[in-house]
Image 1 (cartoon, rainbow, N blue to C red):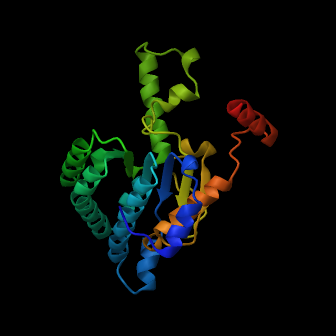
Image 2: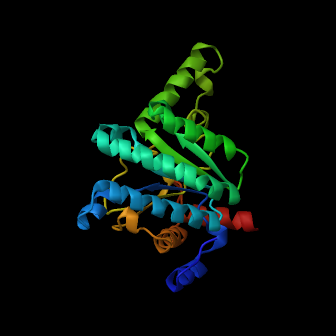
Amino acid sequence: MGNFTVEEEKLLKKIDPAKIPSHIAIIMDGNGRWARQRNLSRINGHRKATETVRNVVMACRELNVDALTLYTFSIENWKRPKSEVKALMSLLKRFLLEELEEMEQNNIRLKAMGHIHLLPKDVRVILDDVIYKTCNNDAMVLNLALSYGSRMEIIDAAKKMAQEYKNGKIRLEDIGEEEFEQYLYTSDLPPLDLMIRTSGELRISNFLLWQMAYAEIWFTPVLWPDFQKKHLYEAILDYQKRERRFGLTADQIQKRQKSVSG
């Protein structure tokens, strides 16, 4: 695993290993601004961002996070200049090829969600190959949201459920939240515990709208290319200080905790 700075070691010691969020999602924002501040092209910002991805993935693995979902390429990103989209696809291919060995060594399974069929064929071939080669890894899931939009995901789920109803496989009275969740892209992942957004923006940007219903949200002004292990640790420490009530009162939570411990 990786090396730690003195500051990171101090933060790491404060983290309670028994309260690690099972599923973390990150909106990786600020690549363009990072590049602009340095008079570089946007693609340089994206290239630097892949280094951050690598470090954060390994940091989550070291902490025994079960699943990490990264907002890698939104359905709206197809509207960006063709040259930038082409460069992003090239970086994605390179990342997948270079990180396969690392994922194998660290028992990480790759998953992708979204309208994957819209990706260029050469990217899909490599993506499918890495997914296949890591399919038996079970220490952590790295879930890439590619050509993804949360509203689209919910519509897709509704269509699948409607088709099953039409085919007589489900009844209206059997449909509830838990049943609906089985049709979402994340049906095989743990519930979302913590969502992080970088760059100072205070919005969700059509990401995991259903899944984040009771997730804790942590915003930081740090641009994604500058995001380090210490920032992840800070987010987790803040998460561990919060009281997650899921609609209950503080007294109800305390009574439940006492009954469990007793």
